[in-house]
Image 1 (spheres, chains in turn purple, orange):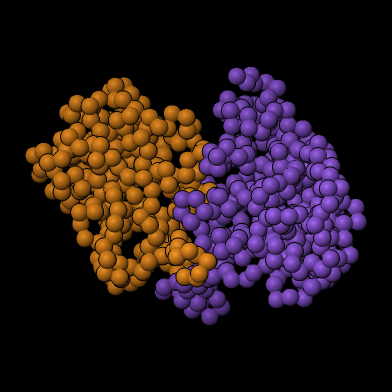
Image 2 (image 1 turned 120 degrees about the vertical axis):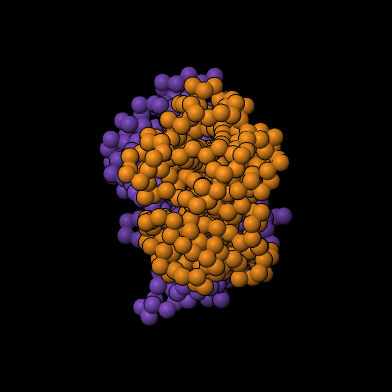
Length: 346
Length: 278
């Protein structure tokens, strides 16, 4: 399928038209001195030059709080269906990789219709990074660029975007872009230069091994002193979990209306760093120690989740946990490098 | 079901069931027999569990105590949290939701022809009873059956009439012990491990099945190691916080294993590299 080029003015006109259509449009916008995904009302507010968003776009597939069922108290329940179609504008490659991983996790084994319906109703317009964030290390995790999952990939080449639309949903959007022309070789060269620069530069923290080594490295690191050393400072606040694009653990709770007759069962984000994450009825906590919870997160990213998704490492190098952690201990690169320094790889 | 589900069902939607029998087994444990409102029977294998749901209160994982050779399903619920408190107030005819069965099973096939040794601590008897009853209903398939039951105190003993009936079987040995001596109790006193040397079956050749509180496994496994029982002949039934039951929510994870999917029944030799297990 051919790749197009649109000028930034033409692209803005397209976004305006999209915002005026019946599809819900979500895009990256400034929020104070940071950026966030939110419903886009005005095309002028879209900021594709952002560095990183506070929360990853996973919240549109796995919302912070999501109703699964509705019921009469003590009676039968019905599924709440997720029919709203939406377009996500401005998903960075590392977040796209994270969404691709979640797609696999929620569709494998027991098929999660709630997640998958939201995902199928979402059209994703990804964009290559323009401004590296202060803690990004996507280059280390091979996620500075992405090659699948999106319906459109935009690359900013100055006063234009190169538009790659590998899916029918993406092509339908390109058809709405007045002025879109086939990309010239010069445009494609510029795109290549942007992507090559990102592959080299999105690396504020440098992992000193290939990410594919991590499962093997962690086989030998279970009793490493780093877990205790770092976790001594851990507040068990779960911020690292909450901002992570690949964390998908959730809790399920019931909520009853004021009339005490009807209600809903919802799921909400949970975090394995929180103290009572593994506590069962009767107050037995199977992961009581902070160091054990701290280790669990890094093992999930580097070993446990990869074993479910063909070896893909479940840290995409967005750097959000590094920025969110008030104790400055969450940086996965720091931890993995510390282990590397003291562990021999075969 | 909408078009985009590809005809797939909602894995979080419980199926309505009715309580057909109930009685208290002791001060905290409620026995229930349930049947599906659809009229269909349950399809499960001993060792599995279900998520029990009451709309407005929540869900909890509960072990299946009956054998699939019986009609309906039997559950035993300890009054320990908000959901189970409500279940304890329910009467015959009341409705609850069920999802599942979920999880791995006891080795009902590969154990055929072997002696079975069940080591049960407290409420651990509940899921073990599923396989015990299954083995009794398929008696020719298995060798001698030995059941060791350890309970904290006399008042907490479960399924007393049934255990008395088991004791009548010629081809079955039942040994009980309680942790604390009691005026009404003439039997063994001490933890369940004290019964292990009394087992008459050839232990290293038997299939050993363990279920009990977390602390019990360590000591029972040490005693079995002393008795030269190979690790691949031992099965443990582990408890964790199985919140979703479908391998997604992460709460029951034990290193890389999701207990709701890979467990709750594990072959002990498969847990060598799972330090969070025991």
